[in-house]
Amino acid sequence: MSSLNVMTSDADLVAASLAGDRQAFRLIVERYQRLLCSLAFSATGGITQSEDIAQETFIEAWSQLANLHEPEKLRPWLCGILRFKVSRFHRAAGREPVRRADPLDEAAEVPSADEAIPDQAVQEEEQALMWSALERVPEIYREPLILYYREHRSIEHVAVDLDLTEDAVKQRLSRGRKVLQEQVLAFVEGALARSTPGKVFTMATLASLPTLVAPPSAQAAVVGAGAGMVAKGGTLAKTTVIATAIASWSGVINALLILRSNLDQSRTPRERRAVVRITIGAFVGVFGYLGALWLLRAGAWQWWDHRVAFAVAAQVLAVGFLAMAPVTLLRVLRTQRALRSSERRAHPELFRAERDQVGSAAGEYRSRLTLLGVPLVHWRFAAPDEGQPPVVGWFAGGDRAYGLVFAWGGVAVAPISVGAV
Image (cartoon, rainbow, N blue to C red):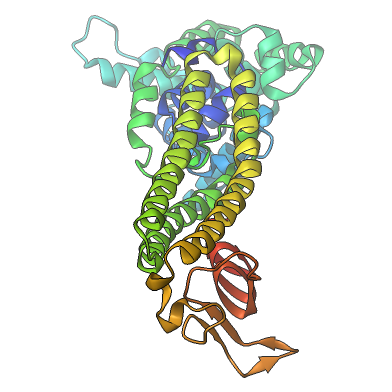
């Protein structure tokens, strides 16, 4: 994605990762793989073990990213996960960092380059010798030493990575070098530089990420409320995804039920045409709204520098839709009631059935059982005329239904409600 090229902050990358973008998480891995591998190596003494622990850290971070409430603190959060895994590694091993190296005084016995030894064996021997030297350095000095030489970083960068002052880093580097014997310092520097993780580690980490564990904010946040809002609302977004899916499907099902019900209640061709017209208009309006939100979100990714403007536009659109929907629906319901009264006067012969009589028990059910003066069930089956009040009950249903427990209809107001609004 081209927009990722302009992302520089951790918060931006976290937001994109929360939206399901693996390329953004790849940049996070590339940004911090050396730091995590170096810290893990300083604690374990093994290149393989350190890279395994760092990879596990990234995998867990991918699955737990929605729990990071302050995306700008991504680095210390990753380091915290890593140190926990290092601690668990030592408890599982039941011992201190590996001691698999020969004593330094046996370093001279390393075979010469003229001997036909596989490169991997030479590399393993080099790493063993390197750790036998580094193991003598206290961890407080070893971490900055490894970061400084392994990542080719400046003192300033090491200070940022370890949350230290530059003077503290200089002091620890100086003391670390003194612990290392002069004759092995150059060897350790070179070995550290050659052991740093590269693209192979990045690709292996990404390949290990669970396919469906990514925070599903991309599906929930159609509104796309900006990178920071997505990152900070990761946990809420997960809940919103489920709620949005349920609300969307219930809305579609409810609209189809209302369409069928209204067609059954229509008595004249004019009423039926009005029902179809209103239903089509509602579907066009809703899907047009969702399409506009999708375009705004796509535009935010395409023109990342203007993402705030796109986010604001999406919020304005959402607020406008939420404000206009009930107003439009109430106007439509008034129009339908007026149309029913007009058609009743123009074609009285079509409204002779008992259920079509205003106030008829066949067209409206009100239970005799009441609670606190409110009918337990109040349901209107027939289309209402002008002047008829809304339906009110503990369980209510109609074009305008107000329920103390449950309501169903065009406008449904209740603790549990299913309706257009």
